[in-house]
Every structure is written in structure tokens, then in C-alpha cells.
Image (tube, rainbow, N blue to C red; front, side, top):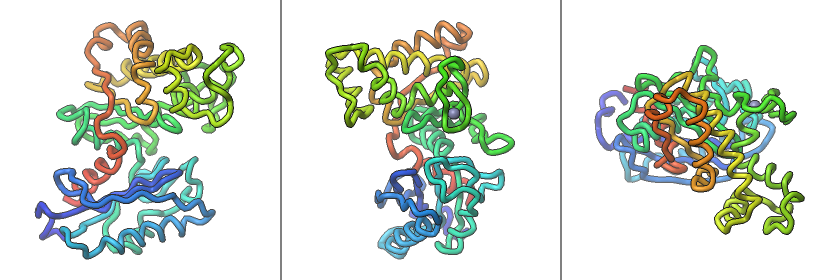
Length: 320
Ligand SMILES: [Zn+2]
């Protein structure tokens, strides 16, 4: 493996193991994706089905007419231990909790395996090939089903002493809302700025905005966004509210870390035009003026692939 490491044809088997879908790709040194697949994540009580699914994809791709696969890099939707070997928490994929995924995958795949939190990998992906290119102090915030965060300081991931650094989604932005988060806290940012929160806030406000274009049935964040683009007052109010809470969270983050750039990703970012003004206003009102003026807040550029690319980059770095 070492002899061939610098060959530009070397590939990493990168995996984004989400609670709903698993995505896998073969990625080279330049970040080019050679193969890619998306499947439903097995939701069995045992982690064996997840391991089996990854092994099947790996076996399909092994020995193909591409460069050698030198390792695997797997992102999980949760915290991993300080040894980067065991999944400690994964609210959306509970079968993996306390499971030594790294060792099992190394055995089944026959490659060295890197294990990383998905938001951390996304931060690396955006720094490598996305909105944070050329930056060394980067925070990425992912607004998806939940709200994730990754922190890069001096060009290196900051995982924290116990593997849970960057959990901006579980910082408190409203202690008086009475809303309980699945993490156990109340008033977390995730309860106001995630796709789940967009839907909940819209549903809660339906009766205040008759007659509404939106109905309570099959409501999704995308539908709220589409209604907002059409000028629906309820949808616009929901996105403005999400923007305010996000701005509070980002102002806190700026005061604490003072990064060069904060990269915002995830499905909710599609509603940027509907929430950005309120987000910027809160940042301006709350963060130090000089900080607020200098920290760039940008939309992610790698889309769904930020995590896969970051995972690949982490593996290339580690295996060097
Ligand atoms: Zn929380």
C-alpha cells in the first residue's frame, strides 16, 4: 500500500452512513469521484446489516478497471470515541452505538479504515474543495434533519477532548421555549433551524395565518420553502424565525471561535434567500462589530458530496 500511495490513481472507498441513506464513492487524490452509489441504510437492530451492505458495495468495486483502493473512510451520524474506532452516539442510527465499527470493517473490507463524524468530514470537504478553500479556521454548520457542526482550527479538525466538539445544533438559543430536544436539553438551535424545525414551526402556526397555502398533511421543509418563494406569509415568517435563531447561534460561535469562515450546508440552505437577512441581522446585533464584519458566512459549495470528499481527504492524510 505504501509503495503505491503517491500514485495519482489511488482511490479511497468513502462512505456517508446516514440515518436514512448510505452513500458510497470511490474518490481520488484530486477529489474526483469515480463511482458513486446511494442505498437505503439497513435499519436492523444489529449493526451486521450495515457492515454487510458496505462489504457488498466494496466487493462490487474491488478490482474494477480503476486505480487501487487503498483504504476506506466512513462517516457516521454521531460522535466517535477519541481513538476514532467506536461509535459513541448515533441518535438516527442506534444500532451502531458502542459498536467497534472500525475494527469490524477493517476485517471485512481488508483495508485500513478511518472513522469520522459526518459534520467533521463535511467541514474538511468544504475546506479542501468547497467554499472554505484556502482557509485554515473553518466552522461548518449543516442544517438538515438535525443541525450538525464541524470545527477546523489551524487546518486540523478540532474533535474536542471527548469527540463531541462542534455540536452547535445542541447549544441553547432559547431556554424559555419549553421545547425539548432529543439530546435532553431544551431550546437547542436544532429545534429552530433544522428541516424538522421548519416543518414543526409551520405546523404550529397554521391557525395564525388563514387562509394558508400550506396544510398540515405531508408538510415538508421543501413545501414550506416553495410557499415562501410564492410569498406565503406563514412560510416567510417561519424562515425568518429560523434565520433569527441561526443568527443567534452563529453570533455565539463567532464570539467563541472567531473563524475565517462559517460554511452553511444541508437541505435548509436552499431557503437562503428567505432566512439570510434575519441571520445577518442577528449576527450584526450580537457579535462584536469587528468580528461580525470580518467573518465570512457562505453557502456550501460541495452539496451532498462534502462529507464524502472530506472523508476521502481525511483518509489520504491519515494513510500518508
Ligand atoms: Zn439538543
